[in-house]
Image (cartoon, rainbow, N blue to C red):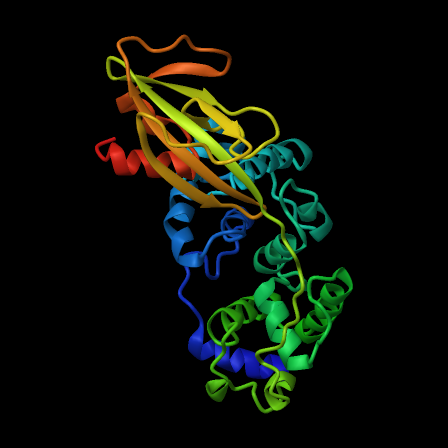
Length: 330
């Protein structure tokens, strides 16, 4: 009953997405990695640009990491770009350049979790795996009356089992796509239940619990970080430094940066403060621009760059936002 009603709704309401119906596992993989932390509308152009630049696994594997990061620039969560680049090399080295067609092998790729592996398995190879994301957990929790905390692994396993049962004997790709669209446009966090075809059988609707389900209790503590970035300018040139080590923005470029434990008073040459929110961090960056006759001596991981060449370097959002606002011709 559930799947039939879902499919009937989907036939009339499915979204038009650039990767909808795609069965090339490489393209499915790219789209799913982009959508891990990105809204669909924002991801469209990035998906097309990524596929145009790296049309297949081999092209991606052979690309320089800086090029990959540059193409990814603006999407944020740059570990996704580094992971997909690493995984492309895995496919070339471990699977002879052929995208793996077993769930376990897909799951072994760098940056591929349960959801992404299931989505690729279902969309590209027709394997019976439910792609359990937030949308699917919300729909199943409401419809079947799952009242346990969905942040707990045991609850996710219960939801996965229900979804697997409902998926049985149906097209896995269509089931997963229908669940994604239904959760994204109909059974949203604030749903319009009066127009929902599921409402007569929906536990949450019948028990007036749509505002309660799903139950999600997950406390995330964000760390505050305070940066000072300085753009030195001399003879139309500036200094960039490459971030190294296991931290945010790894292998991307920034102006020389100092980090402080607390916010600092804004001094001479201050231009703007930019904030950025990450999953576990809240960033505050004070940007300074200092004209000088001669650039300071560079240190390790720094280089002198012509200002009109800055756009060629992969940079974090704070940097690109600053340059867009203050150097719009770049």
